[in-house]
Amino acid sequence: MAALGFFVLAPVMSAPVFAQAAPASERTAPQSRTEILLSFAPVAKKAQPAVVNVFASRVEKMPTNPLFDDPIFRRFFGEGGGPSGRNTAQSLGSGVIVDPSGLVVTNHHVIEGMTDVKVSLSDKREIPAKILLRDPRTDLAVLKLAEGDNFPVMELGDSDAIEVGDLALAIGNPFGVGQTVTQGIVSALARTQVGISDYGFFIQTDAAINPGNSGGPLVDMNGRVIGINSAIFSKSGGSVGIGFAIPVNMVKIVIAAAKGGGKQVRRPWLGATLQALSREIAENLGLERPSGALLADIDAKGPAADAGLKRGDVIVSVDGQAADDPEAVGYRLATKPVGGVASLGVLRGGKKIVAPMKLVAAPEVPARDAIKIKGQSPFAGATVVNISPAVIEELSVQGASSGVVVADIEEGSFAQQLNLQKGDIVIAVNDRKIGATRELDQVANGGRAYYWKITLARGGQVFTTVVGG
Image 1 (cartoon, one colour):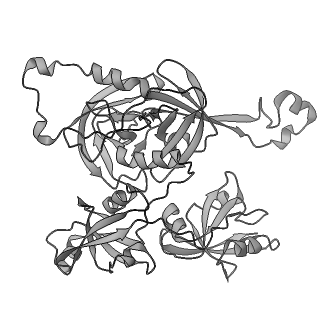
Image 2 (tube, helix red, strand yellow):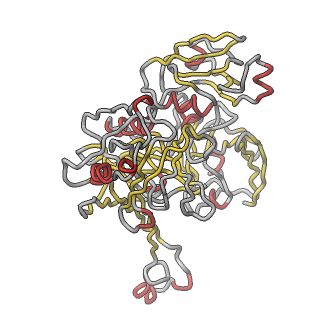
């Protein structure tokens, strides 16, 4: 799987109208040679003004070389011992303008770790942009153009209305050659197990998508955004006709959060652990086929429990839309606004029931109390937070409902050298159980130790390692 290094801005109207695609009964294949020779130019002309190129960068200071730690060398070669002592990391992608005020949607991986972003418009203007919101869980980000207003935008469609076989255009800047339009069809829907983001429910297309197209729009024949191109399946890095786009209905939730001034997207919390159904489990439950999401565990204080759901129930739909696996349930809930109610279709004991569930965000109790560990311990450079339902949702924590989890790792730090990873749960240090971030901070800064015995949980597995002090 290759993530695409490209961004496309998907513009939307200030009061967007999310039009429906033509119903299946009204769609017809070309009936004559004349119809086959029809051009996609009108669609491309309508969409292209709102598609942008995104250029992101950050300046990294290179490690100081002690061999050149001399005033004369610094005068000529800088602090890093080389010609400048600094290195510039760059990223190129696509994006789409979704609001006349200059809101741009792109992929998170296009701007991940970057500090400076510039956007190039179709009219050749180059405008600095501010990163309004990063949402790594969906691989989406929202930018705000720093100058101008009344920008061209692209209308947002409805990704639930598209069907396999629908024509689609992919617009972006592949390989940095300039804005390019490619055509194909929607070759599959609801693709899961892609491994791009936490919400795997992608539109698959054979429209040619290559590095640099990331963040660009997948467009229907009415010139509306139906998805944001995010990744390709390829062994060579080039297009082989299997590309994946994030459905626009997920994109709308991220845009709404950015417009509301949020730095983080608040999504409904299920309060339960879901498990995919195997054929054996389905047979044991008396189901005709292994379709749905099994409730393997339930938080007694969560929305699922409040809705009357029980362990062993199978969720098969959300608001009447089929949910064939845990990823589908997660996607359907994630595209709902917090504050409403969703009707869950549930199979229990061979009977189907409907359970109304309140859509509330996961609580942040206890408070995360984020601490960046300093000093000389193996944890130096790691930012840790207390585990809560909100943190479990945000970091996809497995196997713990309380304790301390690693939320970030500073590059070049002791923590990175130890190979600590984001999402690691710190269980004990030197046989002292760690229950809160301040306890870990106290242990890590309690004086230099001859050795450190560290017990961690990662991916549901617990292991202990010993490192020198």
